[in-house]
Length: 255
Image 1 (cartoon, helix red, strand yellow):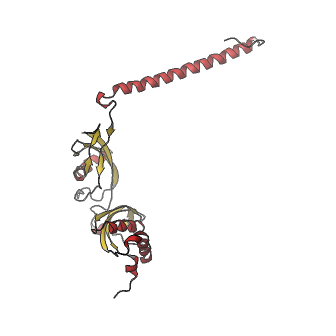
Image 2 (cartoon, rainbow, N blue to C red):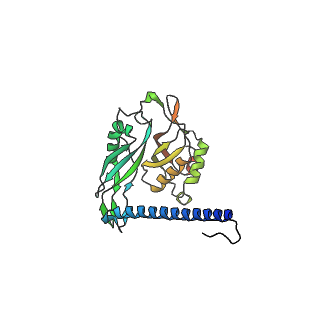
């Protein structure tokens, strides 16, 4: 590379060094781009031929996970988070393939196998045809499961009657109040160690979909005292039956 006219030999040498450095940088960058492209091309060529150009829809789980009957005395009281890898065949049947972390496998494989038998799946499809696939499901094992009554303090409703009435007033649909339907709805609730309600689902409905949804709306607005194990608040899954009726019915004088 030639220097500018009138530059001293030292200046010309400096310009040439800078120019050479820029060229080397450009070459290195081009080589990096080429290497990255070749790696992606290698991965693409390594894909199974039956996966190229095909539309894949992953398997999905239907409904909620119910661990009732799966918690054995050996694991009652354990807490922790783990993940389970399932293989789902074209019929929707699931098989436990792996648990992680590995330390959980010995004590929890039976629980995972029991749980997998309670799950219902829609299988994965490729171009509309059901195929075998794998995916992970996260688990959270609560200390509440399987504990003896002497080990824990049961939760109680911490919200006041005024809180419950306010929640009912917000949740009971205005358009349904003329019918004044009433019922009892059994809810399954994930209760945090702070007494907050998470993920309420209907365990036993009232037979009236409006009342069931009203119960779920109400319980989301309430607070409980937490489950206590050895005097320590714990996250836990509980059931609670919610009485549902209109605010007017709650306020009506008792006979």
